[in-house]
Image (tube, rainbow, N blue to C red; front, side):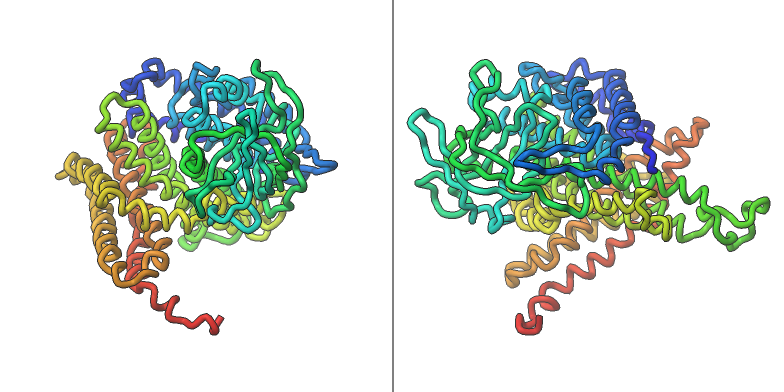
Length: 594
């Protein structure tokens, strides 16, 4: 049986000491009352819920899974009751507007909540995570009537949100979708088509499910320019928010998956279902991306959450399991063997996990704070700068958080040896559960292509230049700090390699149409390592300032920072070399060879 303890000390360190969240966030309109005490109280309550209610259901839910009968889905035992407790606690509407019953708290705080929920029970966390994305999309693009009827119920958690994009023939290329929307005389639309891979498309935990569906109008242009977004509820809502008649939307089957078995994935059939246009005709993809950008960072938090959970349990096992003797002499002479944590290989695995997860937590928190600034700051120039940084970091948080989440869970399973392969210990579930995070909400290669193909080109490279300017400011602040040199110098070297690689790609891609696609994943990993090194400079700066306080927490931060810059960051050189091989090694091979 696995255990989970919310890493509140580390979260508070990043939130309050590294990023001074109280000062930064309370200065924003609408957040004046979000003090450090308020933030800590939210985190502590969430930790209790995660540790006492959600995590005990994690392995139980995996073993039982969701069941499907006669179009209805039943979630595992305890999930419906846990969801009721979760929604009644106000967690579904944490960041939603108070106008609709939400708490109006920052996205930065919501990230830390999402990470804890993901660590406690990844399958459970997907249900409210999708609802929050639906709330965001309707808040940004819905009509006043749609907001009045649907948002209060979504915010309260009484109703579930779901996003319906994928079709059997149209995954990443949504321009190929065939779902149709035919106008009705009353201003509604008849939606017909089938969607697959729909998380939370049908279940027994809420009274209603509100689907945001991508479909094409009869006069739609070809491709992605012809996609519109529609609100299609399971039960049509009356003007007062009460439930009316059942809509013509149904679950045809559920998927039998590798992991995330307590999170239902549905085939959804829309048979002339009544829907309403959300936003402008043919602009549905832009509207859906309001939701997807939040979901992509949310999925990044899922990867980080599983890294944290795997690390915690692997450390407990490594301290308890005795095998062999330390190479430099016995450490537990009173026992038949030493605990395996004395062995260098085990320490390398555990420290890799810790060094990465702590840097990624800081990076994700920083990115979410940029979202808060971009939404709330009074100065338009500051909002644009923060929006640029959030846009640049979104594919990095999503892809690196989940790529490394999969890598770390596998490393921690290896710490267990054969026991890691056995269900009862729980590590194999983490490996299975986290694997989907590299695929959904846009595969990680799509994230890499977004970074290298779109984000770098916006406004003549403005986003990348903003990243350089931000790190320039940090380097200017720590210039001459000999006590920080062991962390600053490796970051400077990594940043320079990233700058040079970016310039090389820009120059070479003009003559090689396949270059960006061939090197995109290496480039994203290179960028991710550089940003994590940046986070470690910021964390080391705070740790050094307090290392003589008597609190071993700060010395531990420095141990981990040193491991990162010496044992993890050097990977950047390999990715740099791989980038410079270009596309020829793959694209010069004739198709007939395969």
